[in-house]
Image 1 (cartoon, rainbow, N blue to C red):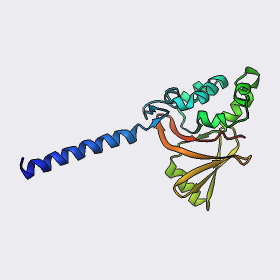
Image 2 (tube, rainbow, N blue to C red; image 1 turned 45 degrees about the vertical axis):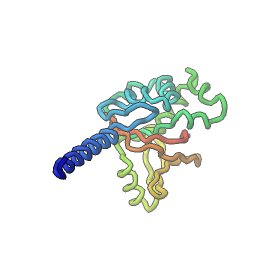
Image 3 (cartoon, helix red, strand yellow; image 1 turned 60 degrees about the horizontal axis):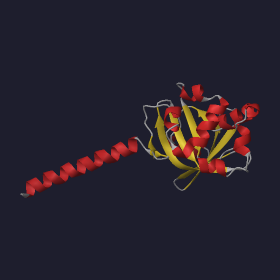
Image 4 (cartoon, rainbow, N blue to C red; image 1 turned 45 degrees about the horizontal axis):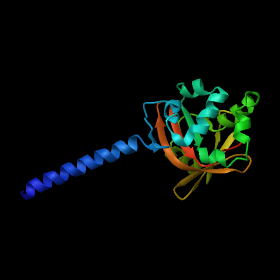
Length: 184
């Protein structure tokens, strides 16, 4: 092989690796499943094995149609592990029909109208002198903070969630996976 052929092979290998990396970044993996920007929040969430509790709660609250709609929405999506941190029996109680209003309030507290990427949130935090307040679909406030390159979201009760996977783009908004359930 000539040097020219080695160079072509190297360029081709780098191009393929770059394309593969771009494809991964475009469809991030969440809960073992690729998240497609062409799908809605609900269409993607049902495939994440880390969000089965959230999906069950969304169904119990009757929010599937809303979160499948055009939005746009920014969803701070707690994982199954986040729900497991709640006191024993909390989730089981919340998904009961008689607690639908409470469940809906908790879930819509994790939804902000509009699309806010991590970059947008960091910009708002900077403008706010270290924190930014977002009005949720529940009508209450979440506070976003940045520590280093990490984003955190706090509720009015003092619970703080870390964004573990940000910028999971959807056809109707964006999901930021969080490690704690926020309470209104």
